[in-house]
Image (cartoon, rainbow, N blue to C red):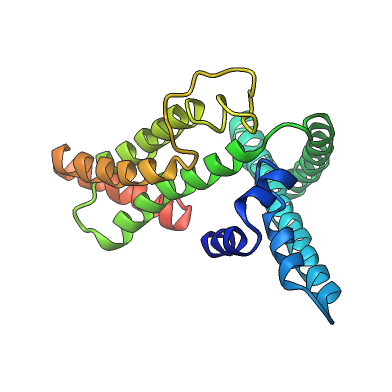
Length: 233
């Protein structure tokens, strides 16, 4: 993404990109059009467009399946029915959840297609890099990582991402923001991960250093580590 953004800025120019789309969503297609001059240009543009479509389709399908699995397994099977369900019932609920999520997604896409989705992309990337990445890195490569450090990383990083995202330029203060007519942002960066990722690693280190190292705490940390790496309780 960084290389494509720099290439688009160098080949196409920032003014041309902003003039076509203030959010910069068409930068990849503008770059492809600039590079696809002469014979075979249409083929290159078609290949890039198909790659973008397939990537978006795979992402949406993966998110829909993950959400449906969580609803059927975690919410329906274990929270509502306390495990007293068959595999067939769980699969049936997952199928209906996929249909419901798909219809809701299409409806929201049509209803909110003029809204800026820059904040969603930024927030999703920031949460992944700030919450999940530090927890996995510490769990795999640092023996001194404790359960308290894990909790500080998960909850502290998530709170940091929420705070910075709400008060970032992607939500208010600019014409490409989610709320362009309002301005209550005080965080200057669009990419909050530049701050939230170091905060996530710092919180994990502080929580592990300051937390107790009793035998009970070590057992609870081992259980939390097993759930994170294998999904088993």
